[in-house]
Length: 358
Image (cartoon, rainbow, N blue to C red; front, top):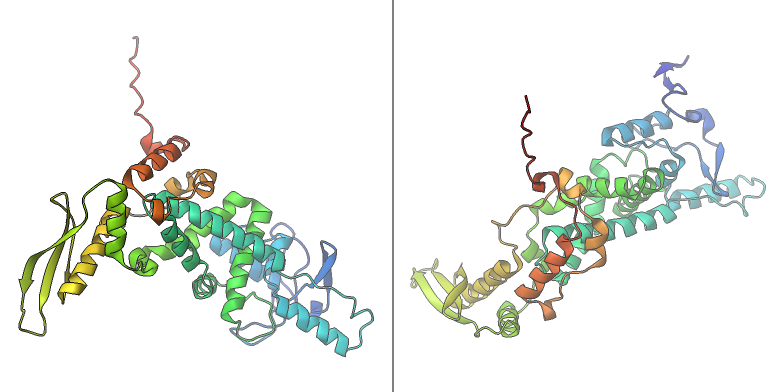
């Protein structure tokens, strides 16, 4: 809990916060951290354009909104951008402060790199778990998408980092927001462990894939030749295309339905406004069937089931590359992975009812 000071501002007590509350009177206070220094108070509140009176309270509230403990020193460092550290050094040089040239300010760089490594490995693992038949090129595409600056900045902005970042620009750049989110993940791993940081990535970043079309994002070229190569490796007949339906040939809204066959079996079909477009779309639909990425596929898992995933198993073993992909090999790789997975609660065999001896 806390109380109000004489100026009417909320001040935390020692039971809820550690350290001294940062007020406007502490703007020049320095706190040691791993041999370097960083400023113990931000300079500006972006929403109200006023000096923040209680940075500790805002940092604590940020953690409570996310369900995390953000009172450790690593979280304070995570919000200090390198641009702010450079600006503070230049300001002290202009004020002719003694030893300003030798002064070193710590920033979020190390935490950002650690967070980026955690995000990359965990996203790859959880995507392989949800899409075990998708070639590794597709997994890499999804990982790169979630690590894009605009995606990271959008998540960072919506969880409320903008009001806590200490940086030189106003408002923070997209790159600054993205770096801060990665630094927060790195700080969470340092303070609470890697598993806790992975759960944070699952809840706030991986969910961005729910409204993403995987095949459109990947943008695979020459789909029919890819289908032919897969069928050849599996020892099946070459793909054949057949016109199944057509309507409105002489109108601007003509429509054609093309089917792809192999060994006289339909393996994919799709519509198109021309024969060439319909054939390409049918080939893409065939690949969706192969890779299990159709809209009717099993949805991605989150929550308790996703948190029980054995991350090292899926992180260290990549999916098959497109040049080596066959359905049989994918199933064999999936079976070998599942043997190392712990049984989830819904997979446990039902307990036998105990018969009373009375």
